[in-house]
Image (tube, rainbow, N blue to C red; front, side, top):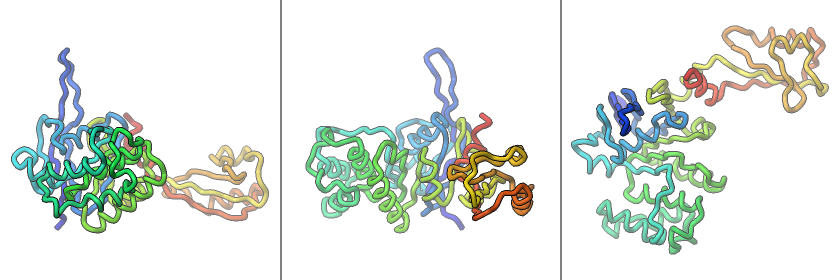
Length: 309
């Protein structure tokens, strides 16, 4: 039996302006995040991702529905629910008058963690902040502030870690370092919920993915099943001679020049046999040196579920 780290049922959030206009940010979202999973929550700007996360964090009041964090209801067991989750917000909001070390120590104090159980030095090292430990947050670069935000979310060793656009605007070194540490936490049993606009990150890291669009959950599957739902592949042909243009008869079928002077075509495996594509190339004098295929990417899946709106 699958145990869920996060259970969301019929969650709605409605905003009402001073003029009486109504905006539905979440429209009856049902979402289950399995315990120990690396879960991706994807959606365009304004789709409802941040609203959902802010409700889990207790920063936004839901209109209706229920949310349980590690089995704790956010309405009736708020304290336990908040202790079970660590959230890294998208915005760089920090108290700039404390040093890195002070910020982590104070945050640990908020959770009632005794000094002998605090992991301040371990977290500072994991986030690559050793040489910044005694520097005030106001003197940190944007990337270093992002590291500090992540560090603060980890001080109470939460069972669930929520990362809202954690690598937005950060350098490659931090991105690599962060994901190595997050993967390590996940292997140790921490459930990770990630939102990101870098779809290649979600495709590489996540084992289960949900897509939210206009406040509604439009997809939620394990990654392999979700990717198989797109009937599309690309066929790349490396020709013996570099081509300057595509013969008209092949262009009509959808062939186009690859960046390397070869040929590429997108096709539906359910409708087209790859041997038919290759035989037509040979029949039109194209000498094939090498071939490779590429499965649909998460970007293709994402567009499938969101482009209609």
